[in-house]
Image 1 (cartoon, rainbow, N blue to C red):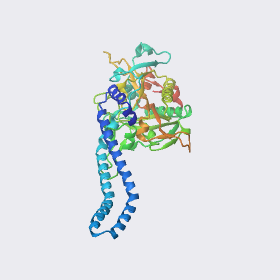
Image 2 (image 1 turned 90 degrees about the vertical axis):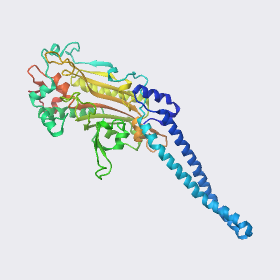
Image 3 (image 1 turned 135 degrees about the vertical axis):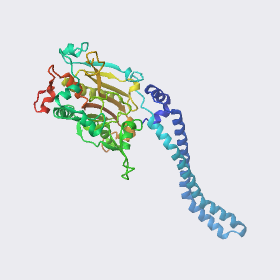
Length: 469
């Protein structure tokens, strides 16, 4: 959620942000509703002040008039009694007016809140303007010694590559038919060394973040209340991508939702809390099962492990003080952790600066990391793909957008301090998402005979095994 005061002070900034991010939000309507609401609340506040004043004055006034009534002439008694009745009725009339204003505010709130939740965080000024991911800009790329991006896989390795689907079938790493039988399209069962390799990369990723980068490991719920999804910015706009558990219709209380990333649970940990500034930054990492409906992706990447409904992901989250320069540094550091991980695995990859149209509602900036996948791209007459990059990570800088929605603040001055409370800043980044990350591992480490060399960094997690097949 954006800062409403900042919107009032500079509405054009938010209008421009909507345009850059391709969101249609009637900000003028929001400002009109906000003005109406504030006017009603101001009127209500004045009536409450009058109500408070009356409560102090009513007793003495009635007492005074009652004394006059006893000694008044018959001709004056009716007028005095009318004054007493009017004074007695005044609080009830004020209460009716205040209640009516409550109802007027309640009529405004739903539309106002819907508009507030739909306004995207304006992108940072240095984010390139663009419409879609096609307008994203490559920042850098890396490859291990011996890999040349200007050559095909066959020219680099000396043999034609197999796709990860072929390799999985050859070594019984994934059972797609039984996965589909159990759960429908875009489902799979990891088997044997496929399951072991999957768990190896997740364990390696979380150990690296904890042991080398100082993150605290957490386990978090993946079935959450709607407020957690709204608070982290995934709702209302991304509701069609989530799986909903209809508990309310079954008489079980609130509906629940399966999360598409561990970010939701990690950020929800401190919802409605005031944190101690001296304890910041909080650096959390989790491995969680993630669920995505992939709505709108019909016919796209239907085969293999690239676009699936369920996967496991190691996610990193940082929560810190409200400082833009500090958030930018965290963003760079978090990408550095991932790059170091990919380099340790020897996976060719690149960094992409996402354009404004690809940031989504909640990000001020986002950098994607894509790994080279030989089986993607155009297929030639021999049935061999040209290879292309495929997204494996996204690193997001959100400033106070999520923390404002989650009401997550810190008190300046440390524990017991009397400083002002301020909304925190947050960031998140994928460390490793599997089984998608298995695609470049299997395809880049395949050998001419079809066997697969296990990356050295993962061998301790595979009981010293060096090869599959």
